[in-house]
Amino acid sequence: MLTGPFLDRNWIGENKDYKTSDVVMLGLPFDGTVSYRPGSRFAPEQIRLASWGLEEYSPYFDKHIQDCNFHDAGDLEFPLGNTEKSLDLIEKNVREIYNDNKKVFGIGGEHLVTLPEIKAISKFYKDLAVIHFDAHTDLREEYLGEKLSHSAVIRHIADIVGFENIRQIGIRSGMKEEFELMKKYNTKALKFSDLDVLRNKNVFVTVDLDILDTSIMPGTGTPEAGGISFNELVEWFKYLKDFNIIGADVVELAPDYDTSGASTAVATKVIRELLMIL
Picture 1 (spheres, helix red, strand yellow):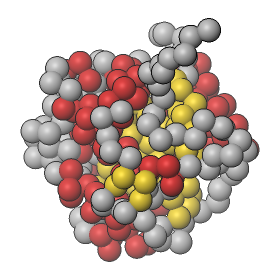
Picture 2 (cartoon, helix red, strand yellow):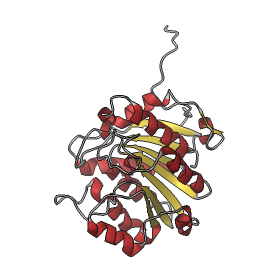
Picture 3 (cartoon, one colour):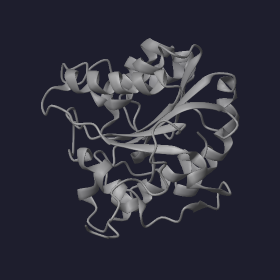
Picture 4 (tube, one colour):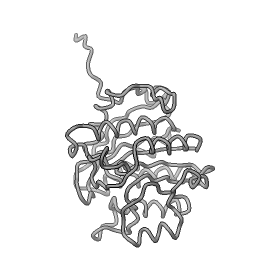
């Protein structure tokens, strides 16, 4: 009999028992509608490996990662080339998580994976709201004739939760019509207090890593100059810690475009800090 010890391929500090966990980390390695640089399907695996380079203690929140009581369920397996079936698999598994009175923490993958998460969660929560960190508006009705596109994910989510229940942070790229839509519904948040309208809602937080400046996050599918710093992102998280956060995801790391591994390391730390507010 082998005595080991053996390397662990799950997230550092996870609760290995699903039943006693409060949060379920779910890998979503799907990038079937990426419009520029593919590769985010490889993110969940690389993020797990990089997590072992983290400290288990967050000085930003004065908490250990074990305090988050999350279980790493691993990566879902998707049928390559079948977007609708892949999204259905996400929705089914997220529905099971909430049926077990737990919260989901999704790791993408591209941003379209957020849509089936919201579809599932909307069956369990009324007054559902979404706080959207991103460089891009993601408010198109379709992209090149395809409605199921990461470029349209927030537009489709608005059909579920309503534009009045969406706030968007860090947006700096999109079509004129999308910016006009943001202005019409006042979805753009420029300061912390702009989020207060959602304080009594059940909030899902979705973080597209291209919100961060390309100087620290070059490894993403659609990099955009002019982004925020890691510390600025954490300050937003700190403001949200007293909100009722009922789920979250982090998406759009494409690790192979940053061979230094720095983007993956940053993504992993973003996940650790976001876990602290669930």
